[in-house]
Image (cartoon, rainbow, N blue to C red; front, side, top):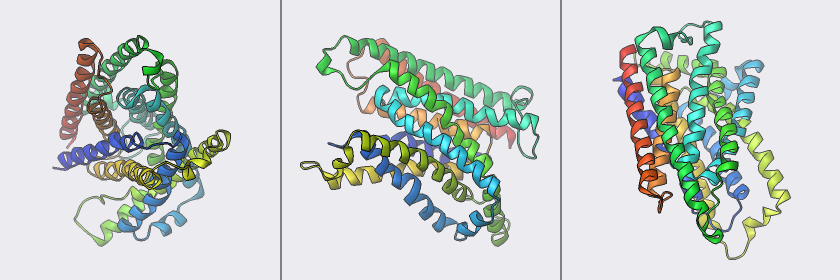
Length: 358
């Protein structure tokens, strides 16, 4: 049952991540940097400590007792991930929710799932799999097949995106959206690689989660692993993420003189604020449930792959619901649907691999 609940928790987290940008698309009259940093305050500063306080009452003491080197590495990976998260917003802006998320998260899935296993191959650690696991053990081979199949699904989504660009290029200039495949693909590659650093941050900050887990298990014997153990680690990672995002958005606010967005007349200020708050809070929920899924499946490649695959799945589903593919030819539409179906199959394969391990 651990595997089943783990997959369910990852689905909820993936749904939150794949949906968080939708409220941003409803914000009216504000620049991208104005809404992004406001939503980020909820994502990275306000909600994480509230979640930790509700689930780990002594989280402040755990952070204080953690060595400086662990905090520094966790914070550093958070900063690098922050650059990936920052460019994620730009990638979605130029490529759309479905295509942008597919490319960015596909790359993040590969780097985030395989790089730690390469590290642990050369630096063995109890309970951690090296890269050889994916080529020598049945569950590992199954996970690798699921990963490759998911990447094929991402390829199908990308091919649909290129077809969409050809369609948009035939429209009159005034009818075009912000869609820009050339600029968007560069931003998406940078974002995809650096976004994987969140998983590295979880690895670096694992000692904090282990302390949280040990304290909970001591108070609740024979009840398994602590569902919310990672909530303390997220705080430090997200401090790093907030740092890079805040500096960049501050630069844009000054450069574009968009501070006035918050007092601009004729703009639905309260509605925009609530939409940004909902988007930011929804974004954080992805990792709240990721931690719950990881507590059931373990912090291995399969957890990260499932998380990314569900996000890609939901993002593409939103792309269809929001009619981002409206007007394209039948072959293009079939390609995006085939990509979604392929990703669903890959999720089933990775979930099955966990049952083999158990």
